[in-house]
Image (cartoon, rainbow, N blue to C red; front, side, top):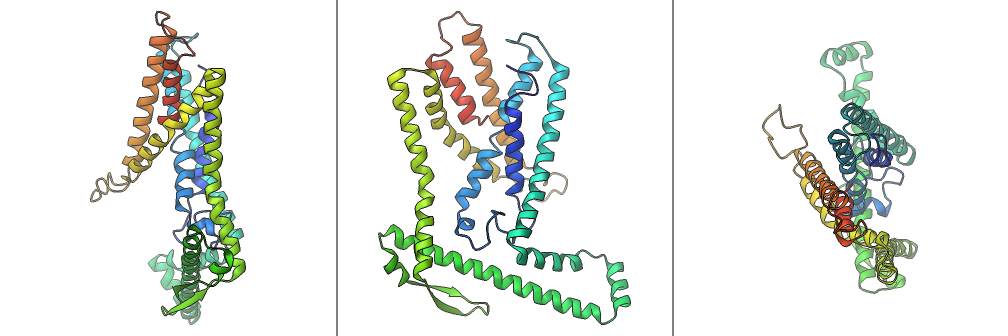
Length: 341
């Protein structure tokens, strides 16, 4: 295995950047910052979760296993390397944090570019909310009646923001109606004649009809949602076929890793839901993301167990197991797939 600066470090940096760019600075901002708030992709929560879970939560264990192997020194040419491993931990931590912060800045910039209305309203309300008591009184005394006008303007901005959010919600209702019609096999003409009940800005329900152009666009989006699944399925079957015909370990490693990846990703995603639910009444310990911490600890434990078994039973073993055999490939696939390296 390589040193502290090895191939998985760029993957860790990329994963933290994706997590940062998908983390919005306001709960009212859309999840995908490079798209409009009314875009149909904004309602695809499964895509948002897969990007966060697949590209961030699954990119730490192999790097941690590499540091443990370096400190232990077993199976390496240079022996124990405690100081380089600790240096690697520092480099990896700073790169990860810096990449995440940079991702949040890029997300904010993209939102200001694609959704300037929502961001402007948040900025307008935030300036007034962020004042301390003394500065608020001083501002009220210095500006006189302008403070009242600013308060009314902020209330107006808040109302306008609420109307935009309601419009985005109604658009999502329309999208769901189109999807249900597409799943039932209806064509665009019949979809265009359907309608859905939405709430207007005053809270009154009214009927919103779907125009033909909108039905055609959302129908294409619905089919595009299933395109990645079809592509992945075809690739998966092609690797199984290649392994069967050529008996090459690389093809076996790819399709075995693909089988092991979904259970590991789902488990880490479920564990991440524990964040904020443990020690809720303790100000001292509530901030700790116990779910994510447990997910990373479990992934690191599985990963280092696979590495130790591989070195002890195959590399330093009696020679009864081949490096390209089923056991070796299964251990590597478990480390990469289930442990999420």
